[in-house]
Length: 401
Image (cartoon, rainbow, N blue to C red; front, side, top):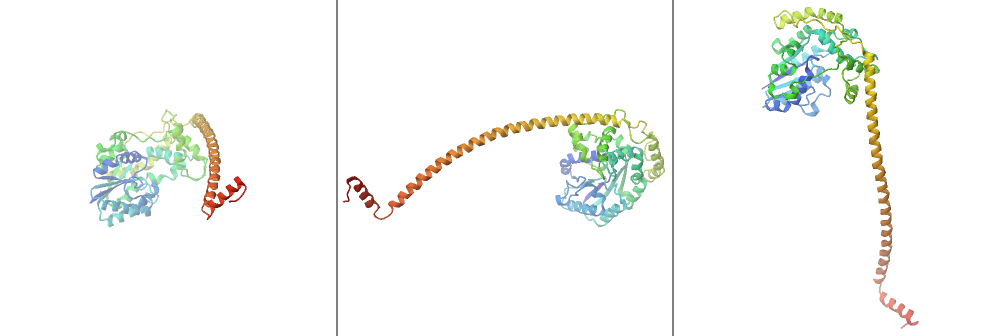
């Protein structure tokens, strides 16, 4: 019987780096008995059972179907000892109790998995908020109206995501022995999410692809985030990060801010930490038996990002220049294609002339063949030779014989 590990986030705690690493190393891990399903189950279940989008793992109905698909895979894969499903939307679901209820029911009913573990990582809220604001307000526009959402407005709709004690209590319905609580501080001390989570989940770290093992998933910097937010702000409704990602890729836009600037001020970060500290301490005592959940490092946000307009102008100059280069290359390509087309047109016209000449010859031959065929038909008629000789004698001697 197999073990199922549900890595439920939270987002902005190294989840993408871990998912990338185990995806790149999925084959050697599978040979060793570890099946890493992928956020949408792409690497575990049949294509028609994959999740259409990653966020659907946070919806009860889709989650229930996904767990049953994993159960079928485990039942038909005796060489697999552990299945790891990493998808942070489970831990950040708007209706977390419904998600927990689905998993609780699955635990009660499954006869395939002998153990199920839910692993969740928490990051100190003042740090998490800065990273999350850039991701889900600036890079990935979640709100409906146009414009750039302020950090304060984003916080008002995001406090639930920073209620770690409430989240733990919701997950604890599955049994405290099934819940593994981790902190981002521990990940940093271990060298990143990849080595830390592989060790925590019992995955052989030596099987992780070397160039991925040391690779860190880098989020957008402040200048890049601001530029992305300006693009998003021109649209009504949510905008996916992929909409502007092509510009970053095509133009290779570097981060222009070198001061480590932030969007959330030190005062706002301190407000966040002060609000969350009592519940953090209660969670630390309940889970770890210690006084504090996180380190007592000072809050950041001492330098606020203030160069949005000038950085944007620099980016736009770079984008325009690169776009012009792209247009020039495209025009050169079009010119080359036109030259090729012109040559092909000349060749085609020559072929047409050749075809016309050949058609004339064929028509002449056809007429000749038709004449021969007519003569042959005449030769097949009774008395043909006699009549022919008679005509020739008459023509020669002027009389019939």
